[in-house]
Image 1: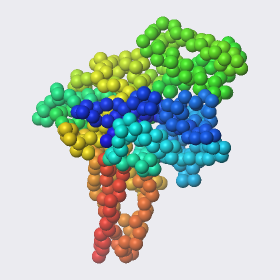
Image 2 (image 1 turned 45 degrees about the vertical axis):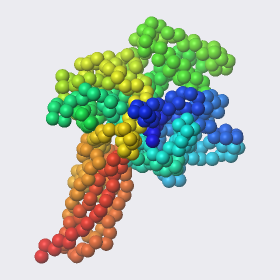
Image 3 (image 1 turned 180 degrees about the vertical axis):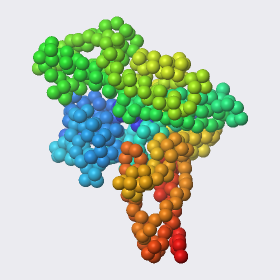
Image 4 (image 1 turned 90 degrees about the vertical axis):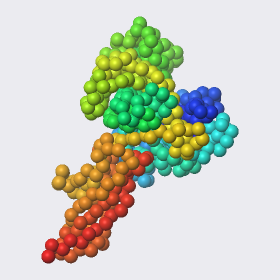
Length: 492
């Protein structure tokens, strides 16, 4: 029984063992496994080994593919992501997204779901070797902003990988569980809950949520996110800054050479991390960078913050929106916890403290808390010996609508699952329609979930049919249309 944090840059696997939670080492004796799949003339390479050969096999090394999971080729988000990827991305015959690589001397294409399944298979096999046993069950996490189609795509990938997933858990729920499970200072259920704000800024996204804790129970109250605001975006702005500097200084354009630009981003990330603990001017030196030319530059924290101001404004907006949606005052918040590598950026820490009027706390392991929470949830669902029950009340992160006529705008749709409503959730909604066919779409704000058609129910001219739909959202955050019932209503 394991928990998996499938990240955009790295994956972590955790297991409940001897009354505690341990993060499992991979075959390189590292806890972090690179979210990278590579293809060569002889074999397929996964994880750390794939990341290590990226520079020499750039176009056949697939990384940062998680944001593409579950999107259709013509979605705006996909077209924006294409500019950030050094490998070839093509439309899949299903309408989704695929990558094209040269594998064993042949050009082949794989859907993003299949690439994800390859990585998950590698994680599973490596973990089984380390734990010396078969993995029967797991819980895997997804970001709060993942839409229904994205969750279904991950579900499909786990099936291809032969994994039995007990639950697809939201990252806010996973982190909150890792925080609250072992705490002995949580209030009783009849007392005021402990309200905790969590800020998770990772490689590709920002998530902020508020969770109320009581003994043996957690309830997510609200959540805000910025799906395209993470560490890589800070790296990109700093990278473009140095591209401009190097063009003036050396008359070269690193951004026009994918391999050189990737080297630049790698060095920029190192400097960015150093700036978290050092406010002085720091050097950036790269030997044999482009056309065998050595390059150098420097930057300080204050200059970096000026360059990244647009991103910091986005962080501030997301933090403020979360506080506003929670309907809580800063005095009602007991603590603010940070996770995710990019929350180490001093300017982000300052914004968090300023808005929530609390010093940030690092109770949790900033990189491993998602995997640890998933492992705990897997043990709870499996009713493992020695594991106490802990109720996790998650929320719906997107409102869900049934749309039958988009041209009518608000008169042509009806909300059936509210934003921030509890999940699992079920309800019945009633429509009064004429005719013996009801065609509609189910949508969330960012994606279409599916087309539906209910046909051949009894109808006579002039009659109105009362159509009742039983809808719901399961614990995986996936929409279900469970039943449709038609009631004949003759006004005569």
